[in-house]
Image (cartoon, rainbow, N blue to C red; front, side, top):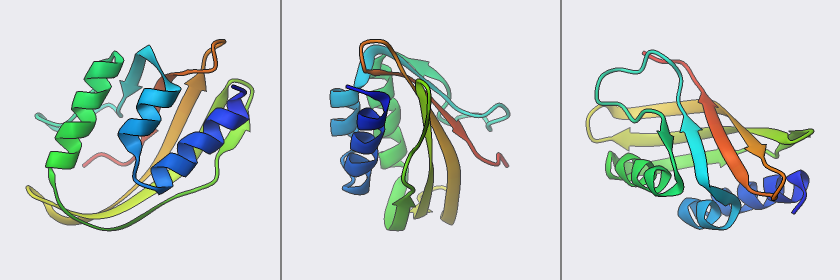
Amino acid sequence: MSVETVAKRLVALCREGKYEEAQKELYSKDAESIEPDGLPPGALGNVKGLDAIFEKGKKFQESIEQVHGGEISDPIVAGNWFSCIMTLDVTMKQYGRVNMSEVCVYHVNKDGKIDKEQFFYDVG
């Protein structure tokens, strides 16, 4: 798959709330997921490997009490990279209601699979 095809497919699946399906279909087995520096203790951090990414997603979903809304922008593609903006309005079990906004950056390898995701958002 081309980078543009991967990007559009990821966005389409995320808009349907099918995050794990997107990861199974589009990610490489050794993909890595990178969060910003300076996260508080106990926060979901950096992981490597598709199983670890699934577990990270599961823990994030378990920390949510209620989803009020969310959006994901159309992707912007540059070479083997693409990015999008993701927003989420949720009530977290530990923190109450929060509005999250992040820049999501992805790298697509020569096999047409995402091998890196990195998230940029304000910490603290």
